[in-house]
Length: 358
Ligand SMILES: [Zn+2]
Ligand SMILES: [Zn+2]
Image 1: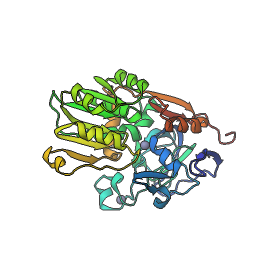
Image 2: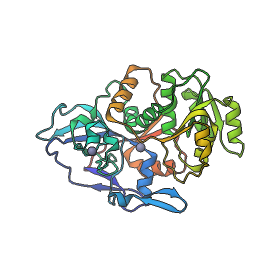
Image 3: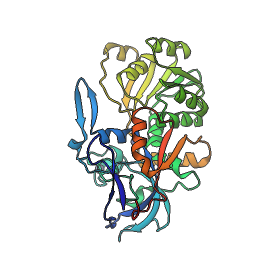
Image 4: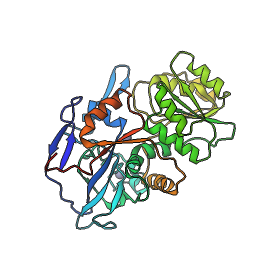
């Protein structure tokens, strides 16, 4: 098999030829056809998350030590089953749910693999999908997404799922209410489409990039706001008539947190997904006085991914903009993503990659 691996943090990924793993027990070996490039891959590549105030969380402390293969938006073909595996057959094309827990604890038994304390997340703890082959612990983590574009389907495993689960955490919305989407990359685009699919009419997309705002409008945002400048909060409140009931922050930096929390109407919810980094400093009394909620949302459950896929297959969800690139362009893609130059989502094409030729 061929994989593009983080060999040294911050340095270009290197193509490596490795022994193709043989599935044991309930494991399933997938041959990857499509693999989405997510912003959080950048953090693992760089080796840390910025906790603000000069503090960092290093991914090596979580067991993620180079050489390591990232990639957690896998789509592929079942190649081989372990002796105890079932439910799929070689040749079946499936989307892979990557947020896999230990499978033994009470949290996993509740169907919340993504909240397990002992995870086996693919591309985070276990080898990921920037590779021709991927080992999946059990066929139950394979989702039938046939009928929709495979590159778009791949992105549902993280960006689609994360957006879906974050939206589920918004309060009940009245027709006058607004939802603000902060950050119009892959997650923001998915969120705008899902809000539209839910019939939400007032969506304001916020970003610092005019091209991304144009894309957001095309995706169905009712209004767009360029958040550059000191008056962004005042402009957001004016544009929405002070009726922002929900904020989805897909950036997660002090500027977006302050903008999102500041813009909330009383009773509103600020949902943080983005992992850009920094720290939140906020006076306590107004959180109570304004009756607001500040909460985090991290990826989503297997059941939620099945719901996202069902929504996509129903035809009610506008596909997110996707650029399919040859797998060998992984380094260029990560650099462009780091520099904020990617419109929509980049998905790597592994279909034609032959490990014998690279
Ligand atoms: Zn991701
Ligand atoms: Zn568990």
